[in-house]
Image (tube, rainbow, N blue to C red; front, top):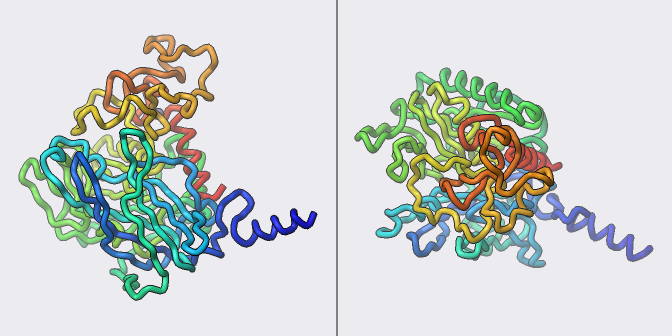
Length: 426
Ligand SMILES: [Zn+2]
C-alpha cells in the first residue's frame, strides 16, 4: 500500500500516469523556438544552430508532450538535463529533405533554414534534432545542444505585431487545434480580400469529411502580412514578386509545385499567435500548392480547384499523409521511398510491415494486394500504386483526397482523427 502511495505521488510530480511528463513541472506557458540550418546534398546532411528565441504563447497540447506517431523525416527530442528524462518529442518534415532527392542535390551542396517550436522549459534541457536515414528508416542525431532557459544568448525580442483576426474560437488554445492562416502576396489594399478568402477556406475545410465532424475542436486565426506586390514568384517564367514570405512556383523545377524556403519569415509571422498548424494562403488564381508534415501547407486563393487542393495539402501538413498518386510529374528520383522498408506515412505501404498500417481495418477475406476492378472500386483494400510509384507501393483505396481529390479514404480519415485527438490532448 505504501509503495502504491509513493508511486502515485511520484506520478503526480514528474509524470502523469499515462507516462506523459507533467507540463507545469517542466514547462512555462510560452514557447522556445530554435532556428537551425540543414546543410548537405544527396550524400550527407548536417545541422547547425542559428538562433534560440523565447516567444510568448504555447498553443500546443499540455498533456500529450511525447509524440506517439513517429512520423516525419526529422525529429526533436527534448530531455530534462538533470534527470536525462525525455520531456517532449515531435516529428516533422522539411522541404530540404525533398530537395536531397533531386538531381540538383547530386551535384551541389546547399544550406536551408528550418525551425522548431516547443514549450519553454523551466530547467536546463538538452535538445536533440535527428534526421531519418532512408537506408534503415531510423533516426540519427544531427545536432545536440544544451540550453539554459536563463541564458543571455536566448533572443527575447518582440517581433512585428501583425494584425491577428479570430476567425473561429472554440476554447482554450491548449485543448484545441489552432489553425493559423498567413497571407502571402496580399498588398495593404488587399487585406480585406485575405480575410474573405480565409473565411471561405475555413468553411470549405469544415464541410469536408472528416473535418466536418470536428469543427468544434479547432480554433482558426488569420495573420495579416502585407506584401509590397500581389502574387508570388514564377521563376520558370521570369516573374518575381516582392512578397512577405518569398513563395514561388517551380520548386525543384516543377511548375505547379508552390512552396517557400523562407521558414524564418513564416515563424516570425506567427510568433505571437497560438499555432498547431500553419496554412499559407497565396493571392493568385494559379493552380498549385504544397504541404510538409508539421511544417506548413501552402495553396492559392482563387483557382477553381483551390478548395480541394487546400484540403489535400492540409492532409500532408496536418496528418502526415503521403500522396497516393503515382502518375504526376515529381522531381524526386525513385529513391524517395525505400521499397525494402515500410514508409512512415500512415496511408501507403510497401507491404514489408503491413501489420503496422491498415491491416486491422481490412475485412479478412480481402486479397492483398487487391485487384483494381469494378467490384473493388469503392472498397478498402491494398491497391498497387502510390507515393509517386506505380509499382511496389500500395494505397488503401482506388480514389482518395490524397490521390485525386475524392473523399478521404478510411485510412486517411483515421490518421486525421488520431492527430486531432493528440493535439487536443485526448
Ligand atoms: Zn487516403
